[in-house]
Image (cartoon, rainbow, N blue to C red; front, side, top):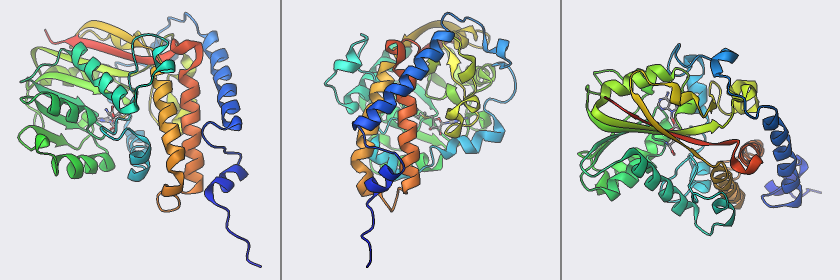
Length: 356
Ligand SMILES: C[S@@+](CC[C@H](N)C(=O)[O-])C[C@H]1O[C@@H](n2cnc3c(N)ncnc32)[C@H](O)[C@@H]1O
């Protein structure tokens, strides 16, 4: 007799993978968060620099050439999977912002879509972006921030840089192709690594503002990146970086490859909050802000929920059982990383610089 085929949920349960919000999954999340809590406790107050652990943010290539393609592999995953779990309006693949207070992400009734707009507003305020400016969106993902800027400000001109084919394709099809606001006169996409930007691609002193969201995690030589940004910024122009940081220096997580995170992001780094503030040579460092990690935890939790709600539609065409297991591991790991210590150990840093 032919046995009925197991559905994907049964197959996942057979691998000890249980759905969002299930008792088994919640238990796993708690266990992992406790593990990270103990880890972070070991490094509380550690003000050593990455250099003390052999990582020099003034040396080498901007991003690790050997692992560059591998690190964009994660972004080149099946488009439909990202479409299913990211916010519908911007497909932002970085934290949404639920509010300034510690409690905000836990008690919020705001949607993920709203939280992504809140983040964009925060970036606009802190980078002092105004209508009429020329803006570079460095590591632009699916183009969400560019889209928000072009809609909000009728006279800005935005350039996005991103090497990733899947994301560039989305920008070409969905944004440049369909939306008049994204017409070629106001928007330009350069599909490249920022490492490869030369004066042939971007003129000197072209931009009023440079913003990167979620890029510095991929950057090893921050100094060289700042040098390039300084060249393309006008005098008096400003640069704002937004990236994941640890509040204290945590040597185990400086190099993604030293932890399981390297499975998803080979060659990536999680910088201590102070590290980008030390870079003051090519651009003058002005100010920094630590954004509570519970904002990222809440964002990941929403992604995780939407992912599980979509599994049946995604499988088998766009999502194998193995991939579903892998994504579940990813959401679980990242959530557990941001929530300990009320979001004060891991969060996001925002770093403002000026060209003088
Ligand atoms: C975490 S995603 C963030 C995307 C987008 N900024 C957002 O907030 O949704 C990081 C982005 O940086 C891009 N990226 C990675 N390494 C890069 C590099 N060396 N130069 C330019 N972009 C890079 C990736 O392709 C991806 O689009």
